[in-house]
Image 1 (cartoon, rainbow, N blue to C red):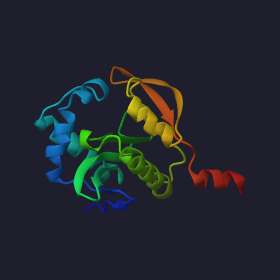
Image 2 (cartoon, rainbow, N blue to C red):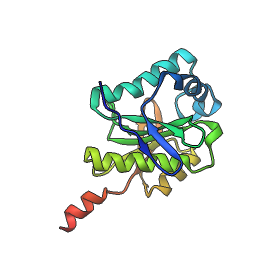
Image 3 (cartoon, rainbow, N blue to C red):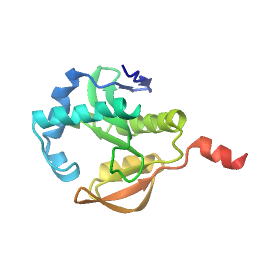
Image 4 (cartoon, rainbow, N blue to C red):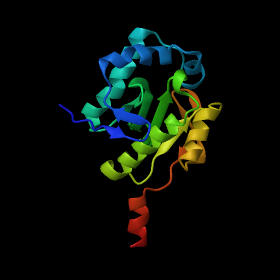
Length: 177
């Protein structure tokens, strides 16, 4: 059994995915937003497989995305975390937020905590986030996290912007030592 940590921030909890997250996860991937930014709307069966893929990265690599839970309500709010599947260009910090939780800063809070965890626990020195050029909300999250544009990548037939996260504090400290 994989020991997936729980990370609490001021307003969100990053935790392991649960089967009970599927309903809200499927609703997220049934939204029009996924058509533009995540490859298209998918049904509940495909959402289950995608949820299993995110959770399964923990088994295969010892890390992966977390479920985001709003602490005040204990509701599933989305996902964020370390992502580096086969065929991916570099380690990524990824996130997605259910519509009810937009505009509250939860994506920034969760992705920042996940990035800090990846730097500290996995020893990552930097990471990227791959963001569709029209996804202005995710670009703003990346900017608030200090990520800067670093070119483009064609991934699965779609052009995405590469946003490079700043070096980890450990890397900076090692260079200054």
